[in-house]
Length: 436
Image (cartoon, rainbow, N blue to C red; front, side, top):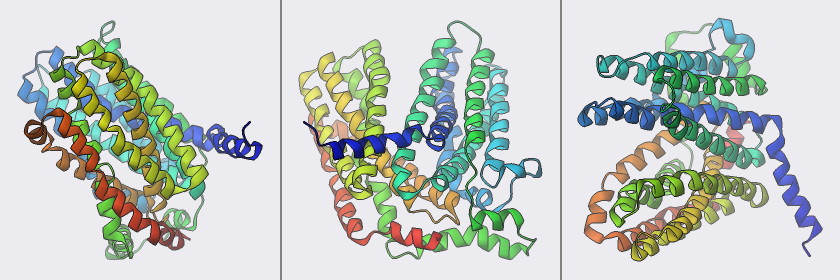
């Protein structure tokens, strides 16, 4: 028989997912994942269907660069008051809504372009979608962090991760499937409508209250140099002068190191060992999404029940160990049952680690500079993972698939060792004290 007290604690941990704030965060996650997948994945499919040259399709990958460089304009969204028409919504929602309105317009406009006749117009509008999508992320990430207490950040991270993946599924499989029945203008209009649901989530979320928000909304005009210092210099100076700033940034690079290397080679691996496209799509996309959602819920519960660092350690160790499942798959060959098991354990572990990781990064942000500091941490993570994954093909060719995936499991060790160091130092407490 289970312990009634233990059952009650788990029930209380689950109850937070039904709160208005967390449900709103889930909706905002959908709006966050949709534009990224739309320009990174679905746009390439659309271009290929129109027989656009492959080299040109490859260059279109640059439209996602705003997601890696959003830290450059995050200070403006942190320190400038929103447009006057939207100031009644508050500091965060007053920026989120006009950005989302512009994003909806850009996605609709993208559907009325012709890549075969005017590829540069398509590229320009896709870049606008990328810029607005990344700007939306800056604002709603700050809104999410400021809405929740530290012990609720795990649930918020899980909710935003679930929403992001569902938004990605809508913009990926949903948009591609819909294109078989209607024209692309209708497809993009439907995607814009889904962003509208995210805007509704912003509107139902309460606006966070803080002295920092009041300062931004009501401050008198100051000289330009003082404003630039406050907006651009102070967020980075406050973070980089913390006792463990360098260790935190290195940890942001290393926590998903093995997953970044292995994930970059996942699709070539599936094809190389003999799986069909239908098998890959059914198991890795549809079934894999369910396993990931289960993982992020589990990660949120771990943070709530045991705290940030135990959840990070469990998630990190699980991410490393489950890479050995692909070594097993490489030895077994194109066996769908083995692929299903490998995807189930790997995606569950990835969701577990992601929820804990997002909660940890959120806890590190000083609420005076939430948007800028979270953008800094996620930009470091995004650029680091891209750079580290660049050599994964050479490593796979040199080692062969079984040894390659075993090696990616061992690559997690530096991050876990650094986590042990940070567990003793507790740098997120300095951020909370500075925010207070």
